[in-house]
Image (cartoon, rainbow, N blue to C red; front, top):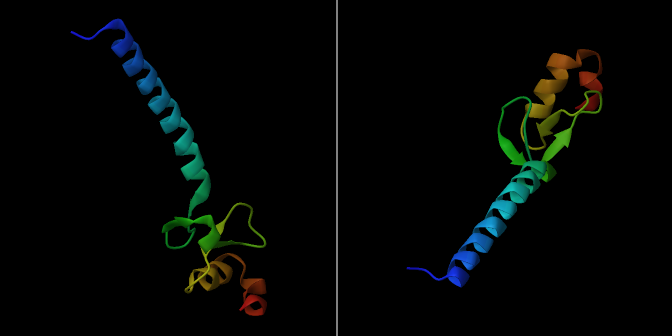
Length: 81
């Protein structure tokens, strides 16, 4: 059987792990975002933001930015390519 001190250590360790898990989820979620066109989840540094849409992230590499501009902003799409 475990002593009172050992049980207290286990409780403390579990509390620390639960706190870390709840905080780390928010940190990781703040670092990731999904592309509005292809839906790929990437780090925010690998995504670009649309100049005209609020909170819209698009892949920097590939054709996602061009597709987004052509579909949602056709009047300015020619000037941004």
